[in-house]
Structures are given as structure tokens and as C-alpha cells.
Amino acid sequence: GYKRFTSLKEHIKYRHEKNEDNFSCSLCSYTFAYRTQLERHMTSHKSGRDQRHVTQSSGNRKFKCTECGKAFKYKHHLKEHLRIHSGEKPYECPNCKKRFSHSGSYSSHISSKK
Image (cartoon, rainbow, N blue to C red; front, side, top):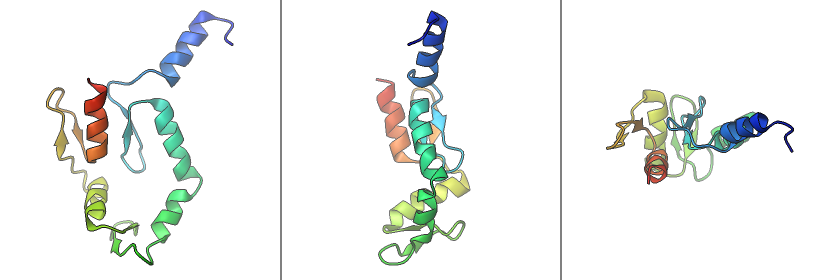
């Protein structure tokens, strides 16, 4: 428990409230509505799981990024990934005009506004 009410309020704001601007991963540009989601996601980068994905280009991952070497099973996944490097953000929120590189991030944003 928290001894002071202000400490509890700070915890709730930091850990549980949605952020209007979303929380973006600086390594792969995925965005999340909650800070805790981003923190959980960041552990995948720290643990080396993402490194295994980068080097796992053999087998059924035949679509390889020439920028970073990450490989994908499907061409459209590579195409979406390339937006990380190009900065392209083709999905735009009609309400706030915020742009997204991934359709999933865009969908999450739209859902959070309902």
C-alpha cells in the first residue's frame, strides 16, 4: 500500500492511465496506449528475443530487410517493417490527424478514442 494519497495518485497516473499521444518504442516504432505495455514490450528488446528474430532468416523467413537483416515469412510483413526505416506513416487518424506506420497501432489508437 501507499502511505500518502499523492503517491497512489502518482502510481495510477504513471502505470495505469492512457496517454493521449501514446507511448512509442524507440527501437521499433510500435506504439502503446499504456506505459506498462511499452515497458513490457521493451523487455523483448533487452532479453535478446528480438536479436533471435533478426538472425532467424533461414527456413520459412525468406523476405529479408536490407537495412537491418530482419527476415519475414510474408512479403507484406517486410513492407510494413520497412516503414520503420523510411519513416513512412500511411495511416492517419481522421479526428486528431496523428499518423501511424503500422495498421495495428492505428487500430489501437482508433479503439482508444471510442
